[in-house]
Amino acid sequence: MSQKASTPKGTRDFSPSEMAGRNYIFETIRDVFARYAYLPIETPAMENLTTLTGKYGEEGDKLLFRILNSGDYLAASGKFDEQGNSLGPLNTAGFTNLICDKGLRYDLTVPFARYVVQHRGDIVFPFKRYQIQPVWRADRPQKGRYREFYQCDVDVIGSNSLLYDAELLQIASEVFSKLSIPVTIRVNHRRILAGIAEYLGSPEKFREMTTAIDKFEKIGADGVNRELKQSGFGDEAIQKLLAVLNVNAEHATEMMHWLEAEVLSGSETGLSGLQELKTVFGYLECQLPADALKTFAFDPALARGLSYYTGTIIEVKANGVGIGSICGGGRYDDLTGVFGMPGVSGTGISFGADRIYDVLNEMKLFPPAIETSARVLVVNFGKQEEAFALKTVSRIREAGIAAEIYPEAGNLKKQFSYADHRKIPLVLIAGPDEISRDHLTLKNMKSGEQIHMHNKDLIAILQKIE
Image (cartoon, rainbow, N blue to C red; front, side):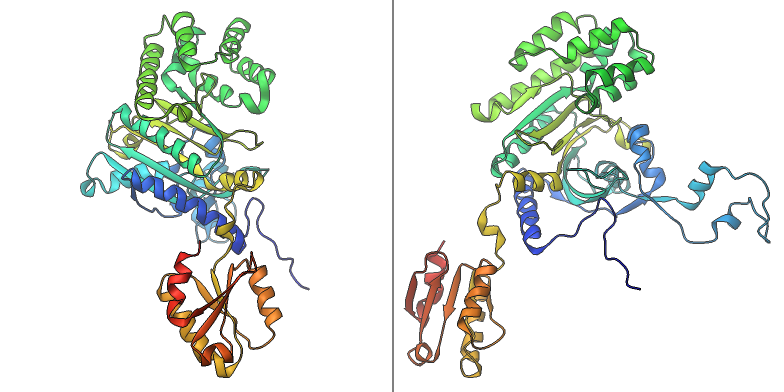
């Protein structure tokens, strides 16, 4: 009986045309990272569970993919004797930890922190790195949400300077501008949220508050209301919080003034976060044109649920598309501390390549040129002409132009059809008559125009054609 071919839920195969789109995204992002002087690294797909657990909050820990160890787990657990007889009730949590001591990475930030600590003797601080690799989350698959997906991270660690927070926001703005995606870049600060928790009279419930706020767009005001009640917030505190989340200020400056006067005036923590955010926006105003500045929005309802964020937090969404955030991040002041290197501040953002692909696809923003692997197809007339064709395709490739020769002789209609389906824009014809005169014919598949030329002029003409 044959087995049904399938991929695990939340994972996908990618066709050549899809890979062309993905590579376009990776190359665009990589180019921006490199121009801001960030350096590439890679880390293993799997990490020790001790590296991963406790870094993403309770919700994040539930989404870790654990890797099963090899061996006889039951015998090794000490709960069974050599004959397999039970020696007592099995502790599920302890058993899970025993049989799984590694997990697939959940994101690239925690492995990066581990990398920094492990290689600190070889690193010059501040250390600016980027990383483009897949991550895995045991999430429920749905539109725009996958179990395996790529992240494109850019971080700098070893500096408290807010210049880097502004730089990351610039990078986000530039990447999406180059991809032609209209976006809103939402910005907040974790200490502003801490100040709001003080305003509610519940600073000790900061984590519960931010967890609920982070779900605001998914579950709405009623859902947030229920979650806060379950966490012990009173009706008055909930109404005060919802009033803050629903304030509709037209400009970041207006919102900051309102928060400073009405909400954070009694919170030293909240005011310090607000001042830092003012500084970051000031840096942006110094460096970005007015059109780019319009993409930024200060949003006190932005929480970002990951527990390691301590300062500026960032989230980017594409305008007019029903897909979640396509980029996000923030500052983390002591992520390396859990690995024995305390007091090292860092900041970073992560671009979700898979969601960016879905946005580009839905908005039909992919450039048509990325869909072809070759610019030139050399026609194959048969054995007599094949040697000439092979020399010609080699010359084209040596000039840095992608080219291929049709593998079988004869039937020109079939060869032109192949070029058309593969979206190869140019077809080079060298039949017996052309070869005898050392001439070639180049056909533009889009316009139908044919150019007749001497063989020696081929490369120069190809290089002039867009």
